[in-house]
Amino acid sequence: YSGIGTETVRAIAAAGAQVIVGARRTGQAHDVLDALDGDIAILPLDLADPASIDAFAEAVAGRTDTIDILINNAAIMASPLGRDARGYEMQFATNHLGHFQLTARLWPLLLTGGGGRVVALSSIGHRLHGLDLDDPNFERRDYDKWLAYGQAKSANALFALQLDKLGESRGVRAFAVHPGGIATLLQRHLTMEEQRAMGWYDEDGNVHEAFKSTEEGAATTVWCAVSPLLEGKGGVYCEDCEVAVAADPEKPRAGGYYPHIRDEDLAGKLWTKSEAMTGVSFPA
Image (cartoon, rainbow, N blue to C red):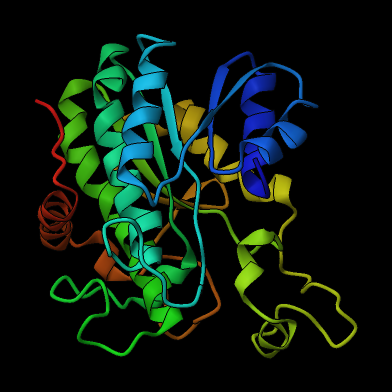
């Protein structure tokens, strides 16, 4: 209900889908989404609260027997050290573990349609890596907000890789998406000075010309959710409405993925760790 989420809802609802939006701030979500055309429902959801996730999933199941598309869009970025209701580091908890639990709870509804898709919003930030399955909560490491973000975004992509292996034989495919650089509230935890230092804004406050609009940022999400060009291609990492290729290490600002998010062994270990941390497993 903000940033590229709004544009994703706008596009899918306009195409005739019934859309259910999980919102931590339901009043703000209504302010934004009530102005859009289409069948759009808003339900409370806090991905940092396991009880909220379960309540949301139960409410969704009370409204529909089938989910055709699940888009795990919510995220926080480069936030100060915080912890969720379980005591887990907030970026990993919200961006990955919350979506892991949510997808598990909604899994039966995804299976009923026989052709569902799950889209996990990752980021070029996966290149920051930081994924440490022995210390995902920065209990033994010094907290670094960017390593924590890289860890969470790596986890999003690895989750899609492993989920696709689980769902392929059941007709459910999963995709990871890098939406591109977009100026949204995702940057709320960064000062303008930090963003200038990274080249995102110039001294006059103008956003870098390489940044996308929110509509452009939502495009790859929608493409992964509905495009027939992706039939039979689950588990892939996508950007700019294409299946991405491996990144060229000599062109660090160009597109592409780093090898660790295509590591099937790492994806399996992350899955096992996520089950242990959440106490949640996917129903058979």
